[in-house]
Length: 178
Image 1 (cartoon, helix red, strand yellow):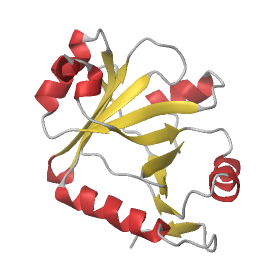
Image 2 (cartoon, helix red, strand yellow; image 1 turned 45 degrees about the vertical axis):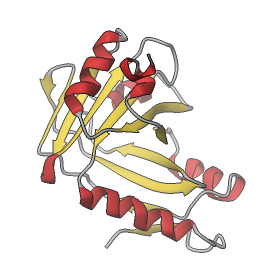
Image 3 (cartoon, one colour; image 1 turned 120 degrees about the horizontal axis):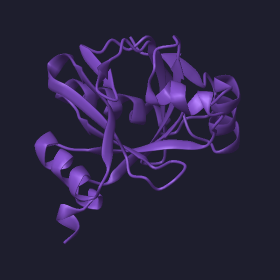
């Protein structure tokens, strides 16, 4: 039964936040929660992106870190292009923005979202066959679900970032990849 539900797509591997104050969010996650270190991926380049079906050139950066086995993502959008990040901030929201599930079968993930009544509000593609959709499940704050079909390179990057957290002593809490 769960196979046909959103839970059947995959396990939650990430909690994502789009804070008004990125520095304060990083400080909270590193100093209070002990997550990290965070790796900054600046100005993500999507091959294609669309928000509510309209092409969108979203300029955003990600900070990725680990809190145990759970990835924490902090997102900062740098331009005023309509997106799920901009609408969140325009509404003055804080807290959990979305959870992320990994999939190897985006068609099945889309079908599970549709069967659950979730509407895809943003999608993007990146080099190497990477796809992501963000669906609104209609459940209130934090009700967006990202489904990511990663490349092996993305999975390798996640493994590297996670390896940084093993035995991390709190120094150098934000780093750049590469």
